[in-house]
Length: 194
Ligand SMILES: CC(C)(COP(=O)(O)OP(=O)(O)OC[C@H]1O[C@@H](n2cnc3c(N)ncnc32)[C@H](O)[C@@H]1OP(=O)(O)O)[C@@H](O)C(=O)NCCC(=O)NCCS
Image (tube, rainbow, N blue to C red; front, side, top):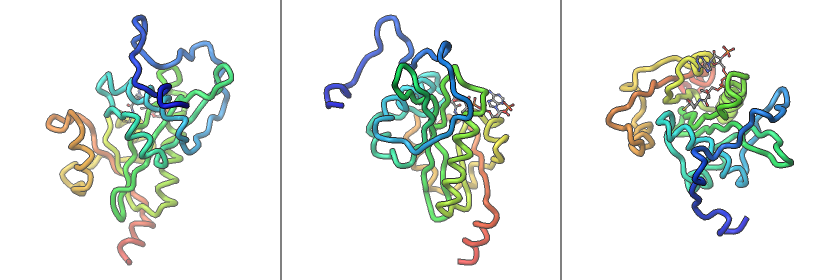
């Protein structure tokens, strides 16, 4: 894709959403995530910023997504011969024992089919493989993360490294998100012993 094809675009006059309509697309069963590729950034950006516009998530521009692409997973479905990103999520290592799940989003037409669960379980496995002892997230969907083993945690007990990212958020001084944490007891023990 040329630089020109990636130049900033405005939505057309009749369009309030940059997301494809998936209502008439046959969705394969058992969709699995894969590591994101550079070519997925436009689709990831459309998905994340759809929810950011509704103040449900923090916006992510293309610069951030290109520079952090190795941290992301996506789920795609074939639409008219092209892979369309229908879900994404990222895992960011913040410190020796701590990783953060960020920017989990599922296309509105495909929610409540287990797609969000699948991508977050894969991010949790990535965190385990990396040797993290704790995974946390800030979210407006505590029931969803609670169903995956995360529990609410007092934000005042979080490591100061967490606040670096939070300070970029327009809701920094009036945050309504729930902080949630998942622990890997075995890896906590390893950290304590090292
Ligand atoms: C939150 C989100 C990622 C969930 O993805 P999803 O694919 O719809 O969720 P799943 O189908 O995997 O749900 C797994 C479980 O989470 C819980 N859950 C998910 N969405 C829920 C909702 N809206 N209300 C209550 N429980 C919910 C349920 O327990 C569900 O299991 P069930 O369907 O068997 O009852 C998706 O709704 C989304 O993209 N929301 C907008 C962006 C967002 O809020 N991201 C959160 C992180 S910032």
